[in-house]
Every structure is written in C-alpha cells, then in structure tokens.
Image (tube, rainbow, N blue to C red; front, side, top):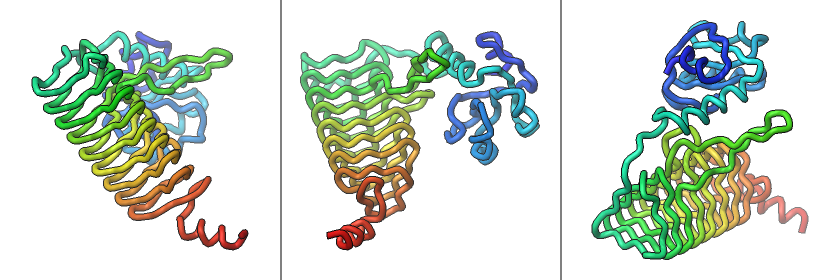
Length: 295
C-alpha cells in the first residue's frame, strides 16, 4: 500500500510518497514498516530501525525525518495511525486472508468446546477439552493439547486515549501454537495486533491461568508456571523457565535458558542463562545476598 492511498482513508498530507507493507511501533522489526511519531522521544529508536520505510508525524518534526523515508503529516499522528490500522483490519485483506476452518480427522475436540467456523486450523492428534474457545485466526499444530476453559485468539488489551475518548484497537493478527504445545486450564492467549502471530514454540507447556499478550513470541521447550503474565511484544527464547505469578513487562527479551523465579516482575532484558528474582527483578544471587543483609 502507498501513503497516498492511506490519505484517502484518513486525513494525511503526503510529503514524500512511499510503499509500506506493515504497520507497527518504532521498536518493531517488520519489513517496510509504517510508524507514527508524535514527539522526539522515540526519534532515536526510529532512526536506528532499518525496517521503517514511512512515518506519520507532526509538521514540527518533519525536518528530522530522513529524506529516504516516506513522510506524511497530521495534526494527530497517533489518531491517524490507529484509524488507518482499524480500517485495514476491518475492511481490507491487508493483514489477513480468510479461510474455512480445518480440523484434522484424528483431532479430538470436545462437543463442549467452541471452535470458530472460519480462520482456524487444528492439527493432527490435537486434543481440545470442554469449554475451550478457539477464536478466528488461530493455527494449532500437531499433538497440541488445550485443557478446559482456555481461550486462544482473544482480543488483546490495546486501547488508545485520544483526548477524553478511548479508541479500541483492532487485533489484526492471529495465534500460532506449534507442535506438542500443552496449555493447561483457563489460560488466555491474545492474537497479534499488527498482523502476523502471537507464537508459542514447539514442546512449550503453559500452566493454568497463564496470560500471553499480543505480539508475544515464546520459544521452544519453555515451562511457564501458573498465573504468569507475559505482556505485549515480549520475546522469550528457548528452554526458559518462568515461575508462577511472574510478570514480564512489554517489549522485554528473555534469553535462551534463562530462569525467572516465582513472583518476579521483569522490566528489563534477561540474558541467556541468567536467573532473576524480585520486584523489580535483578540477578538472583544479588537478590539473595541483599536479603541476607536485612535479616
């Protein structure tokens, strides 16, 4: 799509036209990315992201946008960006092509489960227990088990304040559960926001009442304890342990083989193999050493 086409949907003044293939935040890494910029707070992040090809911004920042990027001006870039996104999500095939639901012949689906009539694929030997809800735009691999009460493909929590109004942002992507994933009772996995998938890697297991937000990518062979909350755009490597009731803040990366102990609140990246503890979480050994000084 071109910026000039977008200007027919939302009010934009196109200064430099450009093609874009995805929408997202300046921290996202998608090819040919259109982003918005309201202030210079995120300008450095934009300039460092080679995936950005076009920007919606205010006139006062126009001179600071590199000449090689498409440029459109708006008095309210955030509003224009999300109005465009919602239009593309709801009225076009920009993000998704519909298909009829497909369930493998040897999958075991409880008659008390709810499977959307369109945009779901369920792989071979999958097990879907009672009161599971599988919403549209969900791809389930082979030998996946969904325990009772789990919801896959939910609308995520993304609302935008626009003055006194609050805009709901459409979730235009899906959820992909790779082979041999097991999700225990009453978990929720939200579909991706800007197309693509929220993903759970092969052989990963989620305990009961885990929440996985939009745009999260979880690697292979991870174990995630009961009540953990993994918020938007988090990346979790392979072979990670996340303990019960841990909370992972948005856009954090957790490296391969890391351990997040129970109840930890993680607000910054965790290195591969690192073990973190506490609120806010720090290296586990440092946390234990600190506890010894106050007891």
